[in-house]
Length: 293
Image (cartoon, rainbow, N blue to C red; front, side, top):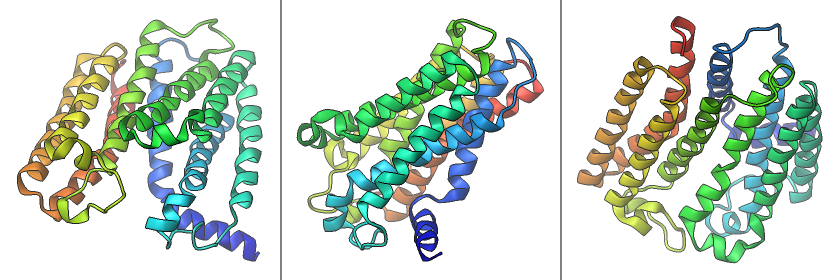
């Protein structure tokens, strides 16, 4: 029971179950409404929901393990540095989740199983930081985009789970949609490490420190525009029009952050970049229920 309480404390501090659950729901939901444009057949979504939830949860566990050395210096209050759980405890659970993820995807056939193996394999190479840890950690943006690319593989695995027993390949426009996820998750990564001047810490890299405030905001806006371009291949113009509103919002908040350099606006900017994934996939999900995409 004490061991379970430790895990619950880790989840409470580092996972934010509500935001994770909402993100996974809209992420999967957006894929599902796109799938419904092509074919409708009775499919049990429970294994898929569990598999995707476990996949993202495991990625978070891997992040905790990878960052333990730097967190010991800069964030000693976090669960692993302060000894709430041992590194090996977390690692063992993470690899149990690997097996469960693949088993759950295999419920949908061989193509789903194979695509899950590819997604999991990429995530394991990510865990090893592509075997170039020292160089990669010195290049923050490269580090981010290589890691977020895993979203493309899990997105394709979802589509193969949905289509796998009927289609032998994924419709081309949905491949664009999977790639759009890469840009959306880059927005989250770039945004969450963009700070006001008073928040910057010695020895801790940030996009605002590397590229300047304006450069960091422009990096996010480029990712947002690219995501819309790729999403447009799989959705109708009405959906893109709504997504344009979120682009304007993030641009406006970004300019306020750049112009003021106040902590208040930096926090709002980070919040909206974190929400951007939910806003985008949520828009696609909602639009998909009211009009074919």
